[in-house]
Length: 88
Image (cartoon, rainbow, N blue to C red; front, side, top):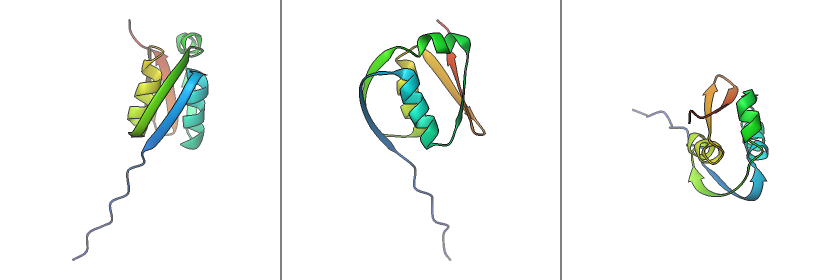
């Protein structure tokens, strides 16, 4: 018997210094072919500049790291990446 090959899990390594969260999220979305839907509150927060050193993270872990630094949340449904302000 043969087992189906398991797809390799995509991992990301990212190092950015003093970059706006918006630019980082847009770069990730572009690479993953996701459309971004950001709420008004998110758009006010994602200008925050952050520095990140992420190694071998899944897409969800990477987005969680990036958005968390600006008190944002994210959700991926179909091919849409929704960014919102986190509940305070």
